[in-house]
Structures are given as structure tokens and as C-alpha cells.
Image (tube, rainbow, N blue to C red; front, side):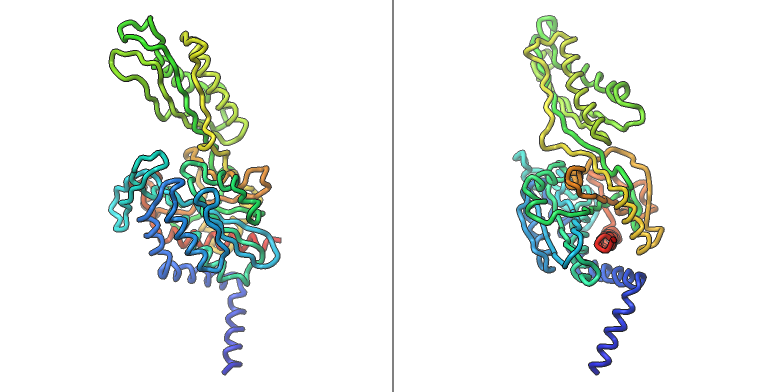
Length: 436
């Protein structure tokens, strides 16, 4: 009987030694895990979203789930960040990151597990909270990937690092984890992986860009000062509303006349607040801007141009020198562009195509200049190669009408988005561990 069992085990090992059989085994294991664990876990994350820097329950649940799989887990990295490490012999170090935070959006769809959560934000205001960008998919996929990698230690050798990152929506969590010694306190990766579920990509598909994945982003505030007066006597004051309005208009010329035509760049004035009454010229207007680019040189050009335009307009409209506009570049809501390492991205694409079929890969042009602070983990000075991929979240027939990310109507088909994400990330990680 023992000989028969040994022979059966040997036969199973031989069968799973072929790539096709191993992938089929992974596929069925992920599907079973979704039914047994991941579906319920996703719904829990979706119903219990938390805002940036406030991911307390999320981090605790994520740490518990991954810690139960045999990983060495550390909480509280860079605020509420979670780091899990599994050492498995000699070899490279691969990091997989998932962001955890939700958004201050009230969910307005008909999902049976929709969020009704509220939470006090870092500004002290209680707000509705929703996973309106799919981060619940990301952390659920991270747990699924952690389980599959732990179960397949015979297929890879090296060190696996898993990251639950806070505050991606404020593009500050990755930087804060780095400032808290992420690459000094824990094994520094050779390659870092991440995924984002996309409502604009069909389910079952994976995008792996070979270059730019996300733009840089900088939040900029401009405080325009003036001299108050009666609205009927504008000549006795300096109208900051006029100054601010001219700054808004003049900023629109920066991209069209200062940046090379083939370079992508955006300056958007997202908010402007000033004045108190119809017939009062106030003394201050506050403006909020977002600035986007795809390379560091253009980013610097844009930010310097904002300084120049604000001061130049103020001078031209007679603002006293002591009341020049204040241009304040955020030190926290800022991130460089996320650019995939081309050679690593090509390798991952080939691994996914070989394992999951050529038709799993999906390519489409970028339609906007969204930002992503994963960039801090893979900036050139770190020496870490990055591969950031998209996973489809909407059935193909519904993609055209899918609500956008950050919408109160945003929703993702968790199956197969999660199972595709787990299979893709596990496949990519194992391939990178075995790369010669």
C-alpha cells in the first residue's frame, strides 16, 4: 500500500512538472480559493473601506490573513503599512505591492455588499467611504497570491516580500514607507510587481505596458493676495479675483507654448475660492492645481512655469511686491512617473502569454494621465526594476459604458478580476524567481 501511495505521489509530481499541467493546477487552485476564501474576503474589504492614512482595520485584517500563511509580518510601516516576508532559500528578492485605501465617495449602486461606511478623515471631517478605485480587489488578490506562493515553495527560490501600502489615493503612502526604512529594514527587491484593476479593460485580460504606466502628479496651491475695497470702487483696491482669473487663463498657455508638442503635460485648476459678497472686493483667493507629466524634465518645466506665470500676472495687474502670490508645492501629494522596466516587462509578458495563453494580453493606448505612487519603490536611484500591470474588471460587452474609477457607481466584477490577478501575479513572480 505504501509503495502504491509513493508511486501515485511520484506520478503526480511528474504530471505537474510540465508547464501546462502546473498552470492548470494553479488555475484550479485559485478558483477553489476564490470560492472558499477570497470571495468572502473581498466582500468584507468592500464593505469596510477606510480612508488614506486611516486603514486600521484593513491593515489588521490583511496582516492576519497573510500571517496565517506562514509569512513574517510587520505592521505599522510608514503609518499603517504592512510588510510580509517569506524566505525560501537562495535567489532573487521579488516584491509584490497592493494599495489599501478607499475614497471619500458615497457608494450609489445596487450591489448587495455595497459600502455604507463613514469615517473621520485626516482633516477631522466625517465622510462616506467607498472602494471606488478597486483597491479591495488589489488586497484580496495579494492574499490569494500569498497563498499560492506559499503552497508552491518547491517552484521558486529566493525571498518574497508582500506590501500592503496605505494612502495611494493621496500619493503619499509609498514615499512614507520608504522614509520609514522599507528597503533598509526589510529585504530590498530586485524586481517589484503591482497590479491595478481597470474598469476600462475587459475581464480576463492583463495589460503589461513596456514603458510609461502612470504620470507624475504634483498638487500645487496658489494663494493670490490683493487689496480689499468696495465693489463700486475697484480703483481703490487690487482685485485678487481678477488676478486669479488671469492666472487661470495664462496657465493654459504653458502647455501649448512652453512644452514640446510631442510631450504629454497637464495643468488643471481644480478649485478656486475667493470673496464673500457681491459688492466686496476681497483680499485673498485660494487656488488648487494638479500638474501631470510623463518625464522629470517636463515636470520641472511645468512647476517652474506656474511660479513664473503667477508672479508675472500679479506684477502686470499692479499687485504690490509685498503681496506677490504664494505658490506652494505639496510635499506630500507628489509622485514621479511610474515607468516599467522594459526588459522586465517584456519578460513578464512572455511568461503570462506562455502560461495563460496569448489572448490574455491586452494593449490599449492610455486615455489620461492618472498617477500612481508605486513610482517611489522603483525610481532609478533605488535600482529596483518595476513592472506594473492592469487586470480587467468589466465584462467586454459592458466596457464602453462602465462607470469610471472614483465614481459613486464604480463597480468591478470580482470574479474573474481577482482570480485573473492572482494567477497573473503568481505566474509573474515564479517566472522572475526562476529567471536566469
